[in-house]
Length: 106
Image 1 (spheres, helix red, strand yellow):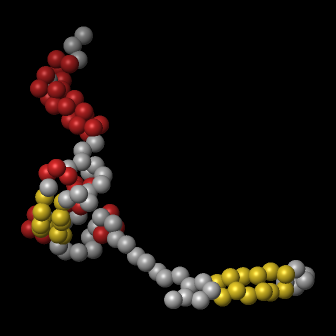
Image 2 (cartoon, rainbow, N blue to C red):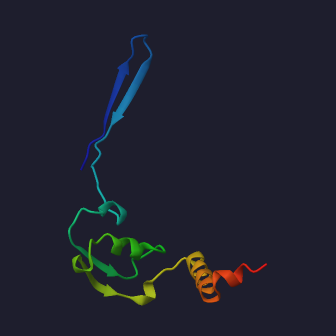
């Protein structure tokens, strides 16, 4: 339990002022982005807690090698993919199949 502390002051020119102090407790959280390089080993659970497209890639890319990555569970229904990325992949695949020369015929 904390106690609020209030104090009345008089400034040099006679103007009254007050201040109120209350304790703050430091809190720290580590996100996937902040933990890069902090641990030699990464353990992931890919589930309903994944909330953004590309988040799984970012989490997995923090491991320095496949040997230093453990995936405890992987729910494929929880994969989130940005539609723009899918469309760009389709465009690049189409260009690759048709060939760049055919796409730029005069």
